[in-house]
Amino acid sequence: MSVNKVTFTVNSRQYTVVADESVEYLEQLCAHINEKVENVLREGQNIMGERPIVLAALNICDEYYKEIAAGKANKSQIKELEEQKKQLNHKLRELEKELEKAESDQISIDETAMKAEVSSVHEELDDANNKIKFLEGHIKTLEKKLEEEKTRYDMRELEFLDMIDKG
Image 1 (spheres, rainbow, N blue to C red):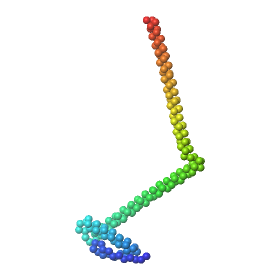
Image 2: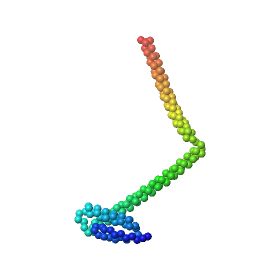
Image 3: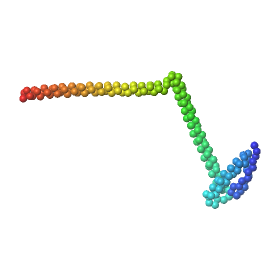
Image 4: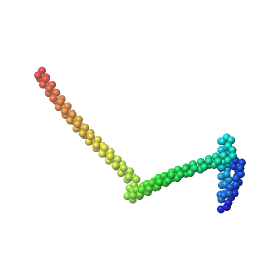
């Protein structure tokens, strides 16, 4: 790899950098540093000497560490998503096996729908039978009450006729 040399100015001072990276990349870094120093100078009041460079370096370090933290959070989220993907792939394989089994058993969609409908009709029939049993029980109760009332009526009628005959 070739060694590249770039000279740049920060806060009215010239610096020379020698590195393996490309000239374009080094110029990009220098431009970023200059931008950060200019931001510090714009926001600060009477900042002189090396202080703007130090403050710019602190800002760059702050950005760097926040990016590292965000990267760790992203890696954690990626790990969680990969685990979810693994679980979903497992479920997909299970569903594919179920589908293959259903196809091998030659169960068509129509047959499955028909079985569901028959099951639903059986449930409705069971509900209807339960209602019929309930209503039959209720009818027997009402018939007993009717018999009791009829007996009471007959007894009162006899009492009434006795009163008329005595009367």
